[in-house]
Image (cartoon, rainbow, N blue to C red; front, side, top):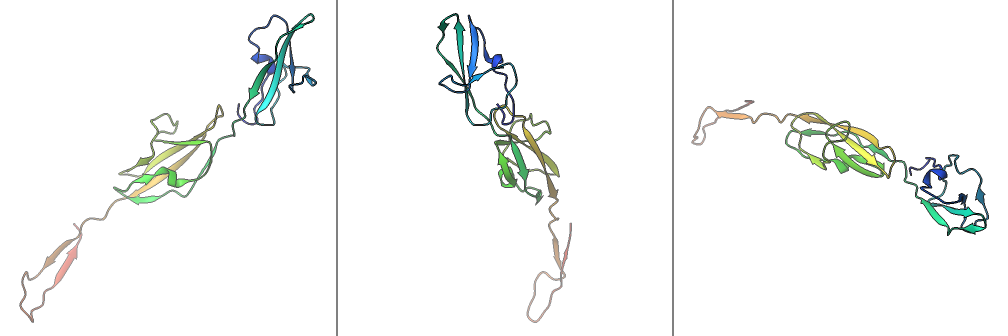
Length: 174
């Protein structure tokens, strides 16, 4: 379960032919008196022990192991500004994380996961951090794309020179 979540022990009993008692220790010295009340495990993992009784007979103990997944979190570095044609590697923009991070092209993070992109216009990408059954954390990264400048044109008033001639070169944008 997700760290900080609660469980109800009685929800984990599928079937029993007797009365099920829950214990917080394997020696069965600490009985949990109300297993239908939600409780929040504090240690990782947390163990609970169930035993069915009927009259003087008892079953073998059954152990419920509760593993706590950390709450997912993600913070991103400053969004990049790139020139068109340049590639963005998303892992370079994760500042800190808890859980597994995947990157997507849609805000719901349902598109196929990607690790890089070469956008030709300003585009927002979305990171999703997941951990166990916890609610994912999300963040967005807006990649600003600048157009490449045009290749300059060059012209000369003379195409061949003989010393001491001089030529004038002119540069301009297309």
